[in-house]
Length: 212
Image (cartoon, rainbow, N blue to C red; front, side):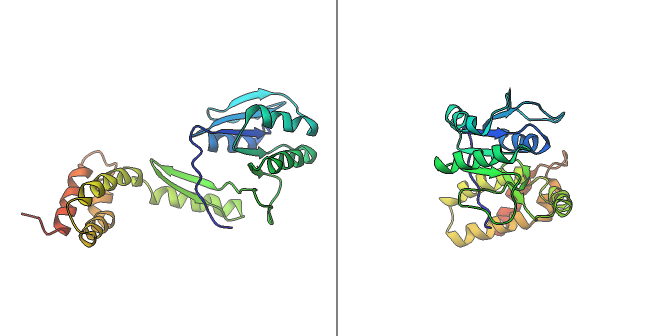
């Protein structure tokens, strides 16, 4: 498999199943999508901002739900194999992306795997190992590593825009590399004491040979 990022902002996602997996999928997609979860019962878990609809669709009802919600992605996370198969079939017939939580290994075109996601602002990291215990440990390590990266992404994007019209490409690259590799910058991020923007400017100026 190859990881791809898909912008689902303001799109609809339909989740069948209100158990632990359905709740986890709902939380994942509700960060930026309009999520509808259909299930006869819901686990005592957070579903994020998803809208929960109490219903028990049969396999024959699935297509109507897909038509009604008009999602770009459909999740099959029920404990009913027939319903999950109907979700897969309805999505495939309409050319929609789908995730079938009861299937692993070889997947048909259109089936997407949903990784464990670590976010820090605009920085997004997806993890998929096939072994939940390993994924959990890696997630904890990545969370520590990317702390503050979202703020740095904003600062370096601003710096990049400023440098674009002022300096040739090689100098821009050197300045940006110096900033993102600087321990001073990373230490300042989120410590509430130092001014990260000021330090970014200082590091960039040094790299450009403009220090006083």
